[in-house]
Length: 252
Image (cartoon, rainbow, N blue to C red; front, side):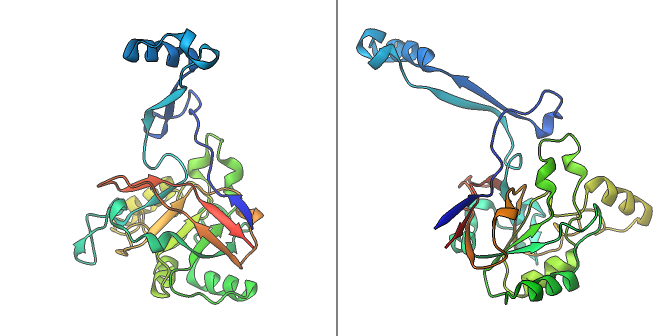
């Protein structure tokens, strides 16, 4: 089995990252750990191997959507199809370990959302018949820009119509190697303001569907189109709208 890490590394953000998107981590080394052990338990450094205590880290700022993460329906709306939307800890585990398929849309321009027809044509090209609980991964190549300041505004996005098409075929988890599943939000915002219509901004998120997205994937180019499995279990954060996940592709 070959394992492909599809998760972006979690590390402190560059200084110019906007506060809502920042990740900040405090690192404590072995010397600090030794001091803490002496304070808590009266065990001095002379009683520790090499005079060292434990190393620890603390997230001082880390949003549940700041890394490679899984969205729960609660992220999209408080109700889905007339029922209370599920939070991340309420979703069935079987959603998050299943057969995967990678659909190649690296040719798509930014703000050119993938349609259901394009989904169907790509599935036919790679020879994959969708079945219930398949995990569909949209390869845009935008993980190349994951460290760039304009990462947030890159990517074609996936249309609400294509999202419905996947859901109707039993797909409950779908992911993308861009900042978000929708087209860039600043462009969706412009269209929403010009049209005055609800449902234009954040259209695929607010499609009234009880499904999960994986956002900010990486390394989809290292996977075959089909014939592999995906594990993408989110952290069990009670009441949360999403959670970080270590997403892994498993290729026989």
